Figure (cartoon, rainbow, N blue to C red):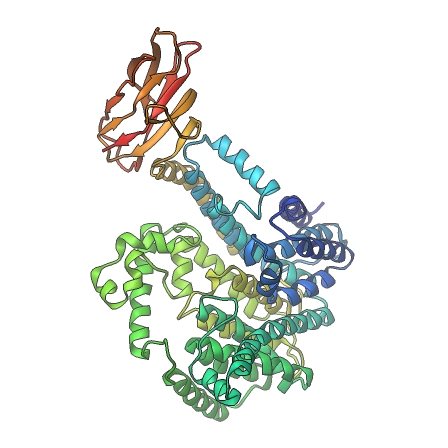
Length: 618
């Protein structure tokens, strides 16, 4: 068995593991479960069919979530549809005798490794009160039992898994569609149709307003002039990035490939893009459309000058068009520049592997200065970089940024054996134009923070890689093999230390282990019955802790309790049954970097039922 087959089989098994949660959890309604089963069976029979179904449904996942009211959320529903595709698809590739390779596998694997390391470190810190073996067991139970309902507890793990699912989608799309132009054409059109159907819901919102208005045409005109909204996305700039990703290829299919149905898609997506009010997305559309036209038509230099002037004029019109709720251009750019600088400062705190997925906002809070708060008050508690490239650098470090850059370059460039396509033929120019337009919006926003937008983006990365004319790609060169090997060595060297530091600095204040729920005693004193071993976590700044103790028995014989701090023995108390023992503890100084302290209680006396009153730390 070749290395490629082993890797495909391993990837398939990893994506199959959470499928037990797809069909076993109550958080997912019946409709997504049935769709997941259909996708799995269709992918095993013919992977292109499964990809087509997912491509058409991915943009409609927010609408599906609204209809089903699933507590799993939009991201959970999207993953419920993609996981059976990835599990069945990679297992099918592992068994296929003629499954070719691709160019996205190596950079995607490297980025997935960095994301997984960040998720593992943050999850180990989140459960720092457990041994690492206990963290692993809990994580396994989460993946196999409640993957779609336990996100609140395993948030860091789930965010990392969402990135890995997207990377798997990109790799699978390239592998399945890379040698089948007919399949690529079908999947691309299914994605555009799904995006158009989702965009119609924006138009439906305006139609509802117009119907309820005494003057419908005035209401429609006012909507185009003043409204900024998206039916499903709170981040309007991310919604604009998603619309432009599909609008450029839809325009290409309609105007250049002369498929008339695509004009209907353009007519649905273009208004949805306008209603987002994203100036970056509107400008990026013109740039992406120009790139698509230039790739296919090979415009002479003198015409590029004219096209450039048209783009500049259209961009100026879009950029300086006044819409309610938008800051002036100069102010918006200044704020984004300051936030990007803040992101770079966060990146400097952990330059190798970053602070972890979706952790920039919290990591930047201590670095926010008063000048930025005066200019942009929402940044007082930390904020994102409003530049997706800086965001990736801060959250995944230099290695993750390099891996994503490698992935994008691999998806955008032609192979050395490619043959030029005839002008105006094929979907490649439109696909690349949409992808580049999306990336341009990332210079002024962070669309990849939205899980569903990110999945659509990675699907498009896979389509772009598959759209090159020649699909044979050279074997891995020394530099790529060497870079991955060096990254593996570096990660193996720093991972244990990162986990230890993260667990040491974890904030566990308020966590109680080995104790029952608090109840009100007959004397008015709330208390908890505790097990033979129990632990209470307090702030590392605390110097005095009062932990009232009492023996719950009629026997007047005292109960012996040993007390430790951070695993070290400290005191021994003789606790009676008649009154509360004050349990006053004077804590020694905490170790540098520690955020919380652990107070351990060990009941030594047999048949002692220890009660612990309300803890006070100061």
